[in-house]
Image (cartoon, rainbow, N blue to C red):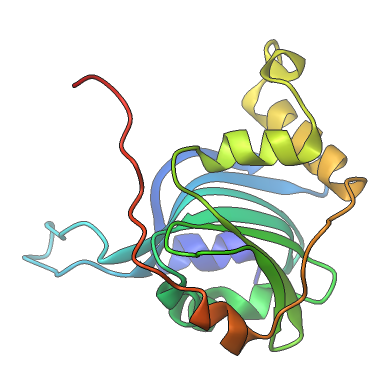
Length: 186
């Protein structure tokens, strides 16, 4: 089963903005993924998810996720996230977590899979990934959704990752009380 088949079969996608093939062998997804479902009020009504991986950018090939980036409201969601989606990651996956309540950045290994976690306070995952790959929004302006995801993925494959290695336990100790700064009209 591919990651997207698993996501669709288990109704784990939340407000997707793109879900489809980006090349003949790669599948792209942008949206949110449910970590913990919301309360079911009736057969047709369900509350929003209690926890989710937000602003997901995912590229998969066959049964494995090749690239994954998302926002986590708290690093405390990570274990539950990995329990739900972990079988689709492997040692070769490129995984970027942008976490609101981290007080420092770090790269850690969890069950043989490497994740790089970064503090996130005001920006979006998309903008952070563009900065990480040194892409400008203008580079993507006239591209389709599929082409944008493919371009970002192609760039991420050649972008070196400068990071500080930490254990999972050290990453847990970096959780603070930070909340995301809301921007917009006052």
